[in-house]
Image (cartoon, rainbow, N blue to C red; front, side, top):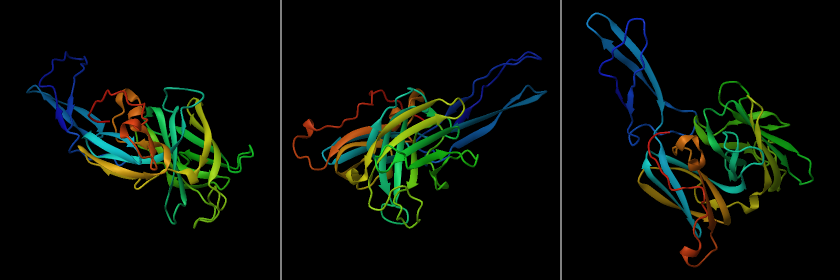
Length: 322
């Protein structure tokens, strides 16, 4: 990061004057965002000296190098490309819902929700929700996400999966109620529009009765609320999940250097949600941090007849820092 202070200033006694400080960052060499609560701070002083008096004016900036990730789906392959910037992170999910029912174009309005299984102490002992929103938040701490789960589809919710700042330390964590144990940090960073919520899934996991899925059960209905605790505004999305129908990529979480691409093989058919948390959120909008593609690993034919289903990209790309 290079800082350029004004070469001179003319300020009358007892008056104030606004000055512009230029900050230039090369995103290819800065430390990339690790998709957690991390930022790069740049600070220092602009020093003015008229030969008699010295005036120091402090500055501070918080920056992260951004990536330019995008996904394309054809057949049973998802091609992930990072066109510019710094290292980008890709997180793959099976799409289960789009948009919300109450509000739009806010940091707590749903753009898309995805689900995937993952491994912690045993195979498939985690269920993770990928959340994409319409606009970026400064921090996720003033918000709460409640996911009501109806395991047996009888119309009565059995569990509540919650992501909230339970300990008032600025870092939301997840918990399952009625158990009430806070287990995992939310995979969310500052100034982002996507988050990853991790929960213990099967009740017969190595963690004992901390999960929300009975032994052998793979399907459930959900109703998700995204709440701004400052003004009580909220968005709602509901849907159904069957983990037996999960679209499984050969790798669902990885980083990609700029000017490179990789092909991810998938098994299953349907739509996938890919989150790119390191992408620049242009003008505070979150759509470039999420991409939806259609895949079908059993499909054989002309690739031109089975292109991706990503209708979120308007083709207007800017590269820089987020």
